[in-house]
Image (cartoon, rainbow, N blue to C red; front, side):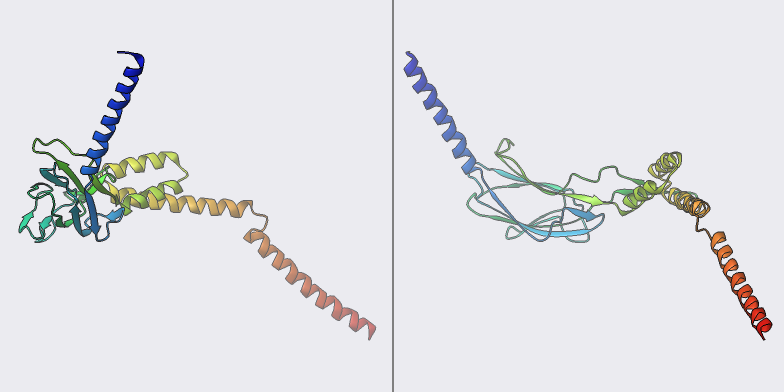
Length: 253
């Protein structure tokens, strides 16, 4: 085969691959629409409700897999498929696709998982926080064929759990001048002694603030002692001025 023929063959083969993948991508492009607010940051145990509509389902899809990090809340199911009379309380659910031309509507209900674990040891309360705060998913939707092979990439909507107590404690640690206390108290907090770590941190911050104020008063040239001394001198000068002024008027008379 000549060089010219080889070039034509390679070009034709590349073009066929392009058409194959371009056509496959066009076929596998399902559309996912969401009704309802899905914020990027939420608080733990916050209740979430949303309606997800999947349309343009490709003919090659045999199953649609739904997965969520939300947990069941109340009497409502996690997944409620409108028009199919189908519900599920499992976080991961696989739905067979019987008619690729129809759209699928699912009501998603759930609650943001808790990131704390509370244990009572006699009179001591331990509160442990899950270090994972990001990477949670409202949903992960993936299309697969009959053998479970994924068709294209999954459609995912994620969220981060806000931990107010953790952020507030981190803010206190930035106020500490003593690095030893900062490390020590953070270790207490991480081990579950949340109340005790906060109480000690508040006390240390208060004491450090008092020391700073006392130091500022000692170093300031306009401290309270100087101010009181100045007032006393002004008062003495005023009194002496009145007396001397009165004596001079008596001598003139």
